[in-house]
Image 1 (cartoon, helix red, strand yellow):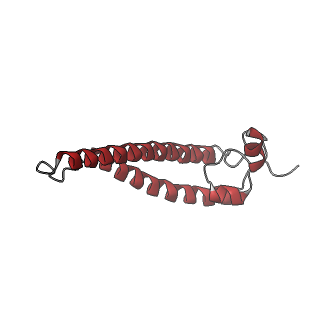
Image 2 (cartoon, rainbow, N blue to C red):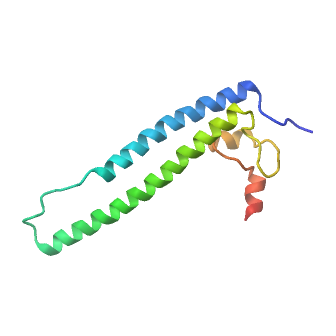
Length: 124
């Protein structure tokens, strides 16, 4: 039977990687939230009514897209934080379905992964 968990050295390497990604993700999230808070007023009061309506429609769509990005970013941050918890309790990198180690290459690409490719594909 193979390894059942990653070495302390491997876990430390993953922790460093995740902490860097988490710092960047938090900055990106703050920028998205600030974009949502900022009311863009380009002074269209004297613009033709139809143009003003188009511009406001585009701004609404853009706000919805930014909102969706913010939600996805928040979920990504939570997944990275959960990965740090798994590192601290030494369960990081173990597939939650098969119980086998997730290959290091997969974790380097997707550090918050909780499933091996095998288990992910079996899900459909």
